[in-house]
Structures are given as structure tokens and as C-alpha cells.
Length: 311
Image (tube, rainbow, N blue to C red; front, side, top):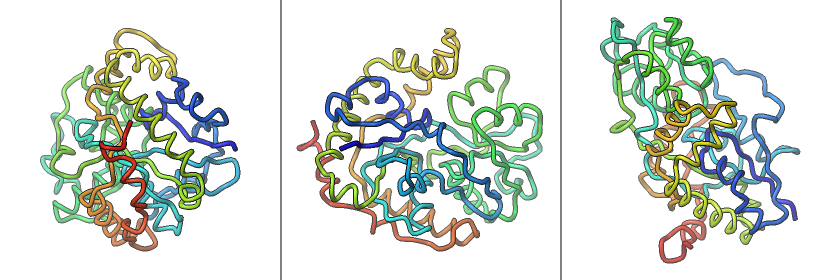
């Protein structure tokens, strides 16, 4: 059978695996689906909704059977009735990014963001980070003006002053930092764990256990290589962006060295964070309803990822 695996640079593990040939040796029928080539979905208003791209393509023709993303997409999919299940999570990625302002900004705390323009890659972990930060400051989503930015236009919008604050992530944040200092408004650490995570359809997990096991084992093998040689792994990302200059390789290597690799079992702590995020997103009008993510856990997958069976 053909197994379709989605990939894009933002999930570093799957992006490297796509280039290593490891999964092809385990699953000769694998087909890779570059998310950047899929038809675009209509944009959503970041004030009132979340994009459903990643979970939609699990269930639509021409999509994929397996995907890895950041924190927010599976919650979004579950709230829209998608019958997906978690496969595994990474360790905390608290060094991956944070909410920043310019050094001279009058914004001194998250509470000062009321009425301000804040740039985020909407629908990603950045939406959750900002919402958690607002909750801590006693604000709601309607108190700010969220601006949907990509990794390409976010830095330029921040530099130009079009944004009052920005959730920056490496390596884009490193490029901004090289041009001048930024001031951290709130760190990811202490706010939420911000792991990478992987998920699939429930029917695929139940009916193709062997294939899913091979995907997990291939990711573990590839992630071990990234940890051992982040400089070479950085080349895949730099080449994809069209440059292999030493400075670009340095930025990607720095980003990869700051991220945890390897798939771990889904924990109760992670599920509690997901549940809290779902409740906040629903309460702020970004999701049609809240959901309990514990319904999306299959015990056998957690068993697969425990140390005594991982290989």
C-alpha cells in the first residue's frame, strides 16, 4: 500500500527524514507530500477563527496519512470534529522562540499590549503562546489586534514598526537579533512546554499499525542523526531556502541545537496543556467548542514509545 507522509520545514524531524532515505528502506511504498504544494485554503480572520489546514489534509483526497506540527493544530482539528489521534511528542522546545518587542518600545509588559498589533504565525504554537500570555496578564484575545505573519514577512514587519510585538522563532529571530537587540516581553519557558507533536487519523492508526510503527522508528533514527550532526542537518534547510552561506548555516545549526529531538509518549501534563489551550481558544471565540484531548490517545502508541520497546 501507499502511505502518504506530509512534511514541511517547520517540523524539522519530518523535513530531515524526507531527505535521509530512512523511511523508504522501511516502507518502499511511502509517498511524501510537501505541504507547501497543497492548494491554499481561504484565509481566516485571526480575530475570530483558526486555520484548519493541517488536520483538513488528513481527511481529504490528495492529502496525507501522517503529519507533524506544533502545539495548536491537533486541538483545532479535534474541535472541528476530526477523528485524529496523537502519535508522540517531543521534549519541551522552550528555546525555540518568544514574544519580543523593540528595546525602545513603550510596551513594558504583556498587559501593555491592549489595543496593540501583535504578529504571530496564526494557528501555530504562536497563537497558544500569545493566548496563554494574555490570560496571565488578565487580557483576552479581543483586547489585542492579532496579525497573521509568516516566517518571511514577520521579521520585516517587526523591523519596520508595523508590529508592536512579535512572537519570533529561530532561525528568523536570530536574523533579527543580528541586526540589533530585542527585548523579551515573555519567554516560552514557564508559560507552556511547546513540544513538537505528530498525529494521524484514528482509522489509519488502527488499521495500519505496522506502517505507523515503521514511521515512528524511522523518525527516531533520523532524529538521532540530527542530534549527532546538526551542522549537516542544517544544510537541508539552508539549501531549501536557496542559500548555503556560512551565516545561514550558522543560524540553522543554532536553531537545531536548541531543539529536542526524538518522539516521546504523550503525557498527562501535555494533555492538560492541550485541554487548557482548547478551553481558552473556545472561550475567546477561536474554536467552535472545547474538546478533551484525552479522547485522542491510543495506549498502544504510548507503549511503542516507551524506552523498553523503542529501537
